[in-house]
Image (tube, one colour):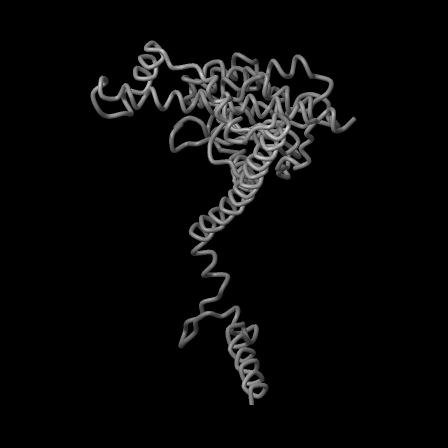
Length: 346
């Protein structure tokens, strides 16, 4: 009897699932019909294109975020577990309890001074509520907890050296397409940096200066690619500035225009862009036509979509062999990752 019921269940499930699928070309392509009326799937998808594209971009962003979040969870868990095990080993070696060892380390934390508390309050007073005098104990405790964690982290790092720890968890890498985008450096370089940037963004300008330094020191060992990621909702001139850089690229002057735009990012109106093109000695008839007709708008749209696919939510964003770095990253951090990648290739 039980076997019979199971068979009936399978049969019903099959019937229901088959009813949920298109049964014929007619049912899948013609979505509505009547006297003098025919509405096709293609017509509906064309009418709803903007909404469908928005939905697709949300899916792309979600998938990229899931990848980043999953890797971050694994990385954080690995670090916590590794620190626990190292502390256990060291406590056993010293013949004391783990909590005793932890307390010894934390006891080395320097007490926050009145000057430290004052500086913290001044820096954050617009974000915290309450009278300064009443907040002092809370600020003191917060700063001490922060410093205690720094002391612990430093100790964990020393234990990793002492116990010759090797981390085998690969960094998260995104497949970042860079074909056809402007670049400098060695075309077949083992280390590829892909920058997504907005010419009106102050942090992008800072990263651009940093990357200029990277280019000077690693010119023959890296490839630096520039992709457009204007954010017109907060930077009203960013879209046209991006187009202007690509119009200049049509005349093999992308990087010169790139430098002019970042050097004067507060003056990026149409007339400013044309003035910069004149300064570079470009063919102005060709440049003006390119800019006025929005010839490269589709290229920029592709860059934006590519950025969303790899989890970009703001600018600047940098990928070093697919490894994501957000914001105006310090020169030293970029060099650290470049050196790691070069060592791995060797």
